[in-house]
Image (cartoon, rainbow, N blue to C red; front, side, top):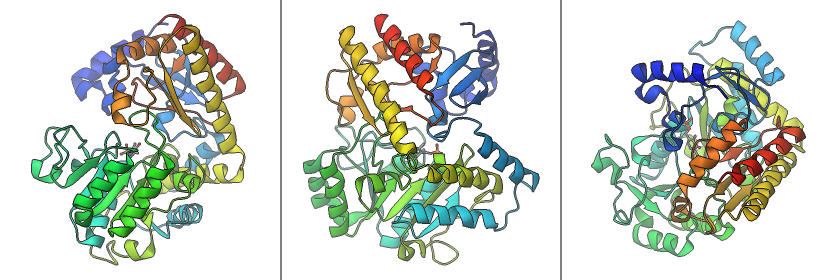
Length: 428
Ligand SMILES: *Cc1c(COP(=O)(O)O)cnc(C)c1O
């Protein structure tokens, strides 16, 4: 498979853009390869600058649940774009998308549109602080919530009481307000609340962790979290940027039957255009400017083109009640193929799949938390990744990401992928 054009583009890009990319993981650093530069994509297929065609399981990291360039979404965008791309004024379309989100997600009574998941999380946290009058927040090890200062913090063994920033440029004083706890550990969570519950403005969680690879929550862990946040008057924020409209039409909260106070969305609700949103109970959302004292604004927020793509995407998801079962069935087949290949070639592997997302971790440990995930063999992952790419299967270039199954993946795509998995594992 020739990638000459991609190599040329990458060389040029590296002189102009840090690392040659506009988001770090795209640089393929952890797998030691040149990233394919993408020319176009249709349905389940993504095509690079050299004309190589791959079955795509990145799906733009989550938004493309219907596959690429869905004809109805393309049409909706065309219509919107022809009517002007931005007004900086309210439009009917954004009211329609707000209504669709509120109807889909029962804990969300009001919603504010922004331009990315990062921005939505940042705003939700400011809102929780404004609402409670407290400063500290709690996040879980291995959960990603975008790149806002206070969230680039994870727990190291020495960081149990005060956050240590993962990134240069984050003031220590700022990170100090971010506490961390272990994902899926009930006792540790109870301890955390005993010592710090009364100081917390918010707890933020990915209800299904997707950014340390897929790690489903233990039901009792989510229930305990709801119970403790209620007891201590802490705002519970579900970061549904991946899970919203993916685990179910009503998100992970519908799937697990747990109501957060604030929900954060992104990815799918923009149908592949830049969008984010945060919402919750009226009483909390009434704190947001211009009604309340928590300031938040955006020149392009509620952008008519992005909102048109989001509305159409949600309409398609809503009208097809079998879509989520079909997605889960396809993902289940892939999970089965991974397990079979691991058995056949005696490769230590632990597969987590829930709904349309899955991760095959190169470890023999059951992966229920961050230490187990990071115990995976990333060298072996890199080898497997290269083999998959050469077979024409495009997955995220990191052990700690999900495969995203879309409605556009055909039975044939799944079979070809199963064959690719088998071929890749034969080379490990
Ligand atoms: C992608 C992601 C974000 C950040 O969204 P951006 O649009 O990339 O800023 C936040 N939270 C979760 C769970 C995500 O997966």
